Length: 327
Image (cartoon, rainbow, N blue to C red; front, top):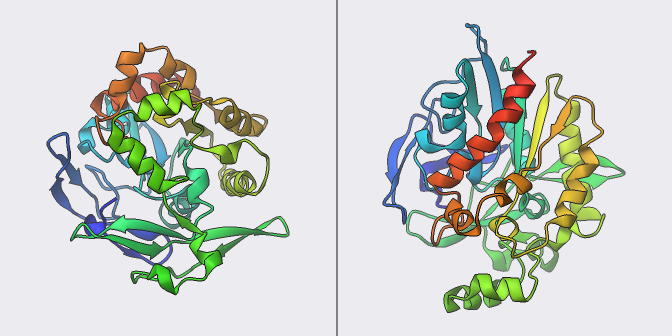
């Protein structure tokens, strides 16, 4: 993620520069980013109060929801508004964030906004981000730089927020202790080996043959999952309106290069919570032919393509309609 369109925020770490309109270079030919006064990608301002007879959804997620790679109007949130007349969606998606930062976005910006439904879209990779204290980004010179992020720790079963205010300065990895270096989110295991495989052009084949598991953290019911579960449970406990929780699978799961069983099992632990609706879209995504599923993402960028956003909107529409029906 490139930080040139973002500005420092002491609690979240960063947000989009408010009232920004710019075109971002991309393999797709480029896409338009437009932000509102709060610093979120939106064609409109977020009004705290509802003034009409319509439904309002507050949407949270990372770059798959903020929609790196596509213009605002081609995102699944904006497509859903076209499909659901009388419904508006405030998209609080923020690229590069974990579920911990998205919860902080809710507390900082959204908890007092009138709404009918909270939609939390958790890219399943976020289990790594919530367990990290630092993350690499690219600056305006396309240099890879390290920044601190806010994070939570579980202490005596209580969540404790750390790294607040967030350090606004670039961090030198060599200045970190060994234990802190282990808390740098690098995007997966064995990054050097992964780069070699990616350049070979046989990435998908290698992953399928080796039964590659991109997120082994879900296999065991231990600290990485405990922390993710605690953050989400805390968030749920503070919301008095219906919640739609959507675990969003990585392309390895959608394209059946990897087994999704453990991820499904972990998120199923939320199914008993009152007022919470768990919707796992993996089966609906896998109903499409594999040749189409590959087109849900860009050729090189793993973010959803315009087709991917169209499919997300199509499969989210019925569950949202049902949840809003009696509101």
